Figure 1 (tube, rainbow, N blue to C red):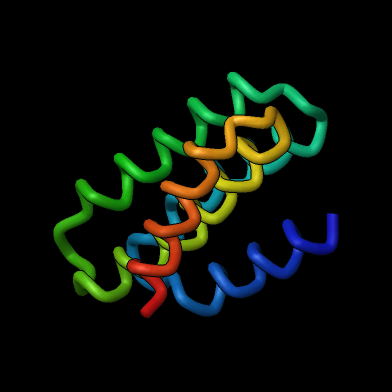
Figure 2 (figure 1 turned 90 degrees about the vertical axis):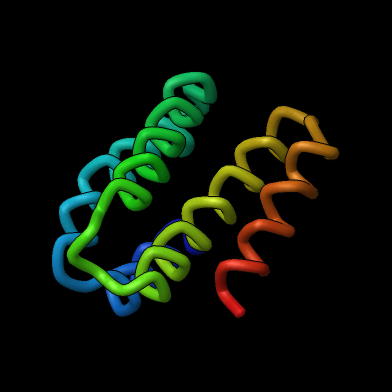
Length: 99
């Protein structure tokens, strides 16, 4: 729970403008993850990523920051269901987008 709260706070700071409209999808995904509804969480995180990529009115850096925290959450999800290679890929994407 602490990780989700911290991640949401960081995303709130990083995501601005139109990107904030992706936060309800992300919040839904976080709720699914917290209640161990992994398939629904994964689908919601993927929709969140798609949403961020379709935005045209925000800077690429903002898209990266918002996407990075979503990839981090996908890493947690994959780790929870013991898909460690998938977790590793998502963590790598998170790091790449956050730097």
